[in-house]
Amino acid sequence: MIVIKKSVAVNVLLAVLFFYSCNQAQVIKKADNQKIEIEPKVLERLGDSVQFNLKVSLPNASIRKNELYAANLVFTYGNNRYKFNNSLMVSGDTLDPHAKIEVSGRFSMPFLAGMEKGALQLQSGITNGRQEIEDRAPEITLTQGIITTASLAQIGQYRGQQMIPVLGTHIAMDSPESMGMLADQWQVVEEMLAAYSNLPYTAKTPFLEVLKGPGDWSHKKWKMEGLPHFVELNREVFSWYETNYHTQFESKREGISDIQRSILARNIRQGTVSADTLSEQELAVAISKEPGWSEQEQLLRAMEEVYPSPFVYNNLGVVFLNQANRVTDTREKNQLLENALFAFNRSNAFFENPHAVYNLGLVFWLWGDKFSAYNNFYRSLALTRSDQLTKTYEAALGAVSIFNGDYSLAAIHLNKAESNPINLFNQGLANFLAKDYYNATIKFEESAIQNMSNGYPFYGLALVAARNGEMEKLYENLEKAVNRSDFLRNRAVADREFVLFHEQEKFKEILRKK
Image 1 (cartoon, helix red, strand yellow):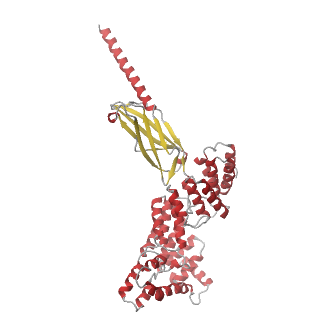
Image 2 (image 1 turned 120 degrees about the vertical axis):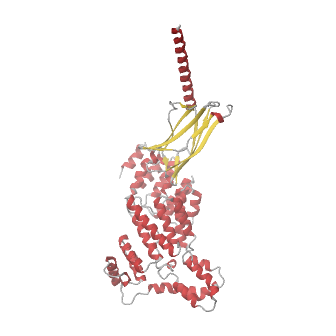
Image 3 (image 1 turned 45 degrees about the horizontal axis):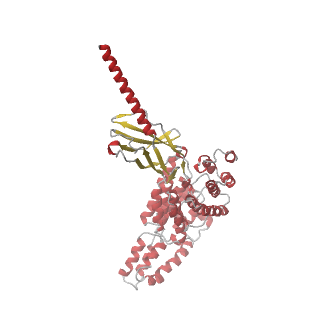
């Protein structure tokens, strides 16, 4: 009798285990029988992040009331794994057993170095009550690699060029925009307004407020044009100020020759004579003659002690900015960018000017904060009416818009920029990413014609050829690009734009040759 009971118990246990094993297999099969859609099919870097949409469809009635379906994502690159905080989940308790089962979500992850070669993987499973099935559905690779073409947008960042680009806008003493940037700022024109007796003080007050407000001289004059009595004051005060400003600046200190100024500037750098041995204007000229960044820094720091001004702090910030663009050590680079940030803020503390605001945008650009960079570039545009400066700021706005994935906006900005090799390349890049390959080709070719030593436009033409399947053009232009730039050679090895050609012997041969 006891033997019979034991036999029954064993049979019941075996039946339970068999039922559980079948149920487990069914659950795994249900999780494995999912239909997965990802958009875009190949991930793309936009700005500093990678974003995509994911949708999973399951067979009708495949999840019971006491079950929970979950799909978790991970991005693997090298020895690193990025785990997403959110996942796709759906509970059987919330489902209509006769309805189609779909669950979707939008995902985002920061773009980190090395991710361009990684893979996005999904692992799904079903929880049965509170007991999770251990044997999940096999991990699925959804997509491999990340397209980073938008990051080719240029604002002069250093990428192994023979000639390191110069970043930032100096305040040059030979331009109309330089007025009001020295230590006396608007003192001369304020005194002229005060001395003008044909108008009461109340009529002149709005003009003084504009002078003390934001913007360069071109912006201030534009603001004053809308004020009563502008025509009269422009004729009697402002025109004279404009005419005589640079004449006064160019007048040399009596008895000081170019050679003497150079010797005194060297002594100021070495600390053997006081900075005020030279006038503010003479120091500004001496700084413009110095080819080295460290020499400029020494003179500007000396000038800061005796003639602090928007001019000094903006140009000192430009020095730090370019020093940062020439170092590889991250800690040193960040310290130099901090110095630049402080200097540009000091320049703006006198009065907000487009030079320092634009240059702040470049600091954020090098830091990877493209949102802040765009805001500063846009603000600088509002602080000037100078045609030349406007073109510079439009070019920067176009480059950041490409990086952020807004190609239409990029085209609008770049159409207003100067037609130089960098801006033409950026225009071609914006067209290429918008899938306008005809106009992309035209702009890349125009960029190449202006500077045949630059590898970027040839790389752009290779990208167009790759998308169009034109192998001969691809190899011809890729060879020109990598022969001109080791940065582009190293990039092409992992560039997802060329994924269909990476194993081609001709492609490998081009990258091997130097």
